[in-house]
Image 1 (cartoon, rainbow, N blue to C red):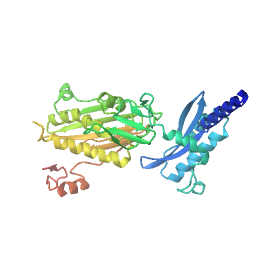
Image 2: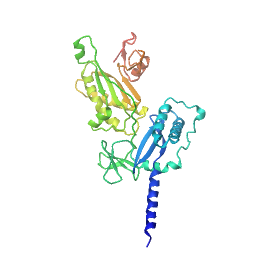
Image 3: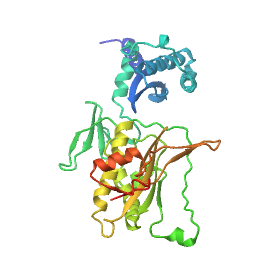
Image 4: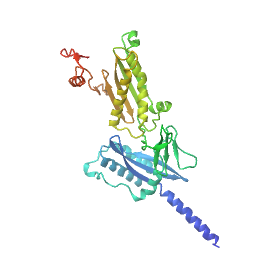
Length: 369
């Protein structure tokens, strides 16, 4: 038979080979991802602790051009690899902060089709491909299969497929890859107040209403509409002002969130700016159709302003006579919305194109009929 010392050497060689294969799956991997109409570099930094991997992500700033994001990534990777073994993540994180204030000269930018992937990254890329994106995933027993804690979703790492539960067949079907959310270091304070000359003003039926959703992710989880894929902080604020009565403004203020949350939850990928514009238009159109069907509301109207905060983006929409203002530290301000009034020349053209008439147009204070 084979001598014991040869068997021991064979086992040692096998253990060493397995260890080297595992260590090859740690290191750094660079990706460039499209996000919100722009591009962002993402550097994965990994190290082994015992027999487990500790993976961390370092993101560069959002750029308009892909070449800028590639250059950010190359810079992050260089900072990571030049650092001592125990300081690689900290070095990349420090450089990512510096990149927020960096503007690349055109002559330093690579081509858009520049190949930044390296052969040495291949083992780690393959391992990360078997890992679901985002947080909240749990392995199903000992199987190579993951389910999400708060969403009807699953991930098959063997085939690299994301799955969702079909509402009709109650079986898994393919779906898009979820957005990997970013938590930005922002502090947001919110509040609402109503000012009137008398107590009657504050209790009037047609008084303005406000809606504050300070934490969309938690609100969505409570209402069974998962929003775990939204960038943080995620919040929504809306102001509703009644026209010719208070029944319509009361109804809209109570039903706006029932339209917003399901539509946000319907798409788990990154919300681009044009998508958010379409989202607002869809919600307001749906509210408008349902409003005229409510008793006591068909002859009334509502003006609304909405502010949706997703990470480092604030998207504002307005309709009617409400306005959204940005006030600077020095007291200067500017309006973020257009002028929705018959006095506006642009609004007059839109109104007439819809077949409506404006009474009192000549006096400069018209009313739409």
